Amino acid sequence: MEKVVITEKLSQFSDHWNPRIVGELNGQHVKAVKLLGEFVWHHHDEEDELFLVIKGQLAMEFRDKTVTVNPGEFIIVPRKVEHRPVAKEEVHILLFEPAGTLNTGNVENERTKKNLQRI
Image 1: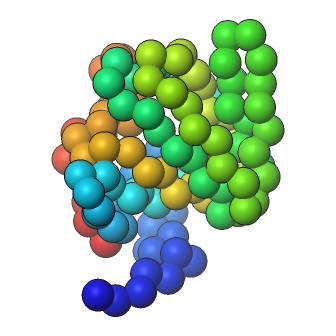
Image 2: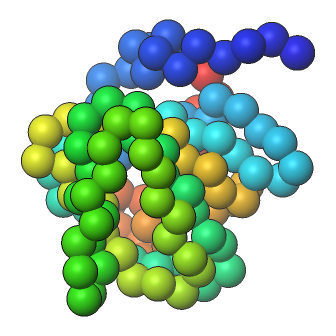
């Protein structure tokens, strides 16, 4: 039972689109990740995802609209909803999602991360 300092966790890595597990509760992972550029369009068949912006500005694209998420704000993407995170400049995020959730959802490509590092 120790506190987690989010900025310390985020300072431990510099790569993008590679989530690290920083906490776990009730079958959920809390993941820290840095984003830059466009991700892939994807959805999650069984999992909802919460994106909490720590630093920067996230554009969450949906097929019919884009939602801008600023520091201190979050967006929940419901299961089965196709989405694409976009970061014009580096964005620091905390993700809350069920353990085992693939970052690329229904798509497997070079950005898919199956074995996440715990920091």
